[in-house]
Image (cartoon, rainbow, N blue to C red; front, top):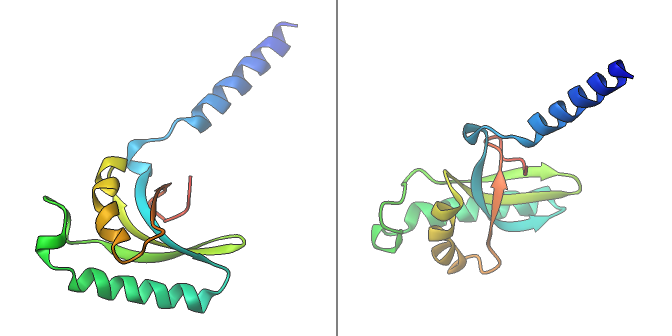
Length: 118
């Protein structure tokens, strides 16, 4: 019985650790497109990169990074086109109105540094 209790406790602790995330392992991105067509995703990514590169400083949120990029990630069954990474949800949300001016369906997502959703 004592062994069973110890195993149960160890299992619960392991599950608890799985739920904990190091802040350096999570960031935020703004998702601008979702498709099952890789070529379409790449086309939207290229459009977003061009748009970001041409965006005047006056249209960027105050203190915003100039180092934003657009990435395509795959999470079955869709390709996701995202802009970021942002260090916090607040930073991503500061950019949201600017991004929506070009990509109206944009929304903030939590993501790992490799781009995958968490």
